[in-house]
Image (cartoon, rainbow, N blue to C red; front, side, top):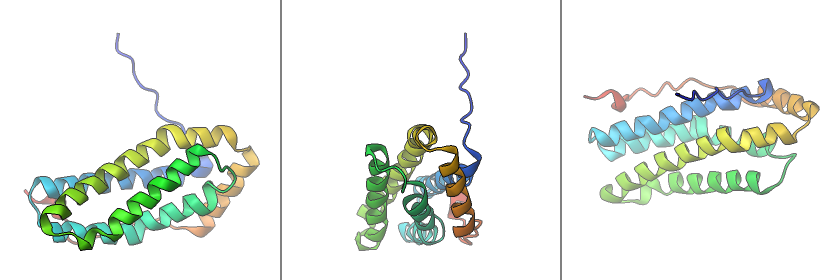
Length: 162
């Protein structure tokens, strides 16, 4: 008998952050595609910096300054520590020679992928259990006011190379 996984249901108030996680997973896929098809590291690095500025950094800030504030436990601390590690890897990416740069790009893709899956599978359900309905509503309103998701309009679509 095949067991089907139930889709994750998310509080309406933090769905926007979950949707952004989808784009972060796509970001990981794009990096991996570029590496797999031997796109020069510099092109992938430029995309990583673009995505960081336009998407990941604002997303991390929303989580840290809005979603995580009411609960300071080990689950939230793990996410904050992962944000810091990802941020450091991206900030130091330009310092690496080509051979190390490619390994670091792969590492960034793995770190972001694992981080998103942690938040979706463990942290967000944990927060939804711990936060009151009123807290979730307030968080949802703050996220709506504070951040507007931008589409990924990066022009060099290296991940489509054959």
